[in-house]
Image (tube, rainbow, N blue to C red; front, top):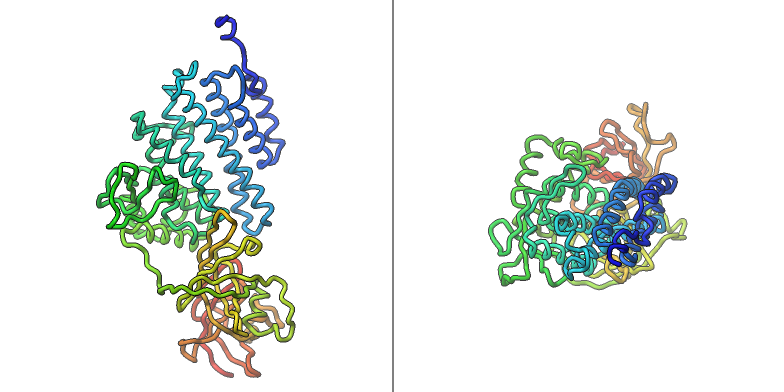
Length: 508
């Protein structure tokens, strides 16, 4: 009877060459999101297929991953290229990738479980255990990255998967064994384990999704330079509890070591990255670092500086001390709304189209920490321009979101840097001598003259539409029934939503 059953095929659709060829032909006809959804369903059915030996289950999982890797890369590129897509579109894409990667992890864990319990035929998996662990950890890292894209917490379940996969590799004495994938990329389970830990420890809540992708690729490129230890040493200043199923934390001197805790740090990765950009600023460009990301030089350099700040043994400190403070505030967003609020134009047109109620939780001299309920803030991203009106105030202040994270309940937690606590709407036109080629409309454009607060009276700070500032263009500012000639000094900040510029001012 056993000899008769040995040759039987399972009831899994992809347990045949013909079905696989048909699937490969069908996938290009689908959208990438629909395609990864289809692949996730095939992965899910591996766990319930009858007469499917463990080695053939692994073969199906690896076939699906081979077909899905390029699709996930394509979806990631499309997601990052459309930061202003609707929340529905972003949620749909995130759900598809998360489900696909989750099914990959479950499939590989299913193979490992069969090996651990000694299931019939599972002994044939032994030569493939290294590959299984590395591929599962890589899928976990992709899930973690996508959670950070959407400002979600990396859940307990994912941290448990990461920890248990590493523990399995350690128990099997495979943690430092070298695995080479189909793209000739060499990594060990330890390197695959450390990657999501380092990304989580690098303060991704202060990065744009595009920067998170760049940071994850930098970590991948430097994977052999990070340090992991069973006990704290001079190269480790982060800790990860293998049993707590929680994110890694900064190591404190008063914490005791434990067999359940591993310690890690950037080690020579930080030195290598710092030396490269010190030699030449353009070394921070993605291509120079072996990364495949399209981004501006300024944003790339900002990302590298951010990583080096959090990869330093010195704990990054806040510029200003935060104090506990609870208060309900009104917030508006989008450039026109912010200009109307901060510039005092709501007195002429009092309708506010996108106001939301937030709760301030702490305050400092230059900003706030706030909680945004699930019903609000779907538009939020790091770098969003907002205006904030406090409970007892009549004026609006301009601010920028610098940090953004979410919890399991859907609340968003934002760090806000205030640009000013007031301002005045003004109109600027191109100065006569520099009007040729000006990107300022002939009729002028409304900006906000931000409150000076400590700045010299001979200088002005303008909140402008993106792309209006020019280092070679003087402008005329019409304010308070007077005209002023403004000489450009420097661009304080540039984003997709606004320019923040400094000018020297003369009355004319």
